[in-house]
Amino acid sequence: MSIRVSHTHGEHITVTAANGTEILRYVYRPDPDPFESRKPYAHPVRTLAGRTVTGYRPNDHRWHKGLQMTASHLSGQNFWGGNSYVRGRGYLPLPDRIGSMRHDGFSAFTVGDDRLAFTEDLTWVANDGAAWAREARGIAVHAVDEETGSWVLDWSIRLTNVRDAPLAFGSPTTAGREMAGYTGLQWRGPRDFTGGTVLAPDTVPAEGADAGGLMGTQGPWLAFTAEHDEVDGHSTLVFAHAPENLDGTSAIHPSHWFVRSEPVPTVAFSWAFFEEFELPPGASFAYRYRVVVADGRWDHDRVAARLKSLPW
View 1: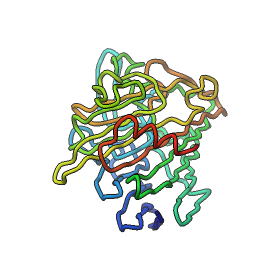
View 2: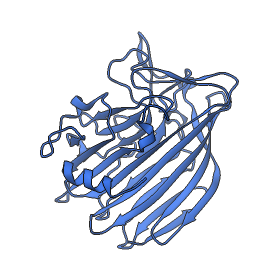
View 3: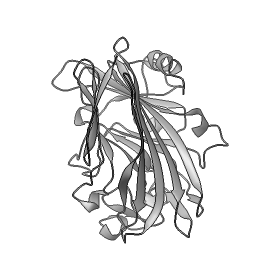
């Protein structure tokens, strides 16, 4: 299926499928509230049938915005947004810890009949204005397929430390809060996804698993399916690692799933769930991720088959 791409310069990029549905809006203009950690995000994300599968500024976490790259604990700064978790003191509003990710431009931008791919250059800026890291972010929309009722969003990151000191990546769990290892690429679902079903490669194909049982686990993919309000139907999102993320040698640090279906629907590719890791000055790390956005309630076999049909 063909796509149409529109770019409102300084604001956002939209992708529209041939049936007229806007399936993606990638927003890179600065957010108004620095406490929410200003950074680009994807919202709304929609299925081909037009069902919204991302949440934006929910009343429980105003800094949750669709699909976004985050770093909840980074050398004492918070590139996640909102309250910061402090060992022995809990969550505290600490505005002087909130960093931001500055959009610097696009170094590559290619649009084809059925594919969008661009590279965005960003700077990770500490609260005091110092540049801490440079990021080359790859975004691609492809495999828009009416027959399967799905499309694919690829998201990659290559981050380079531009400080003269190591960057220490962690999470609330590395700071003392059990099973709260959120950081990295994070998805926040809409309110009607609360209580959804989560699937993983080793779950029972027809039943899925409680999200709590998959918290902190590892695996090549995770799927989240839920029934919408207002319309009669389900949608499914599949979150998948590129092979090198999990091969034990290429990635700078092992990844674990941060996943909840209650009280909020969210999934994160956590790169520092249980342990911190450091990025030395001048060094870089990279990860690649894939999100399949689908209409319908997909089961284990359908997820596995679709992923197998999508080469990296």
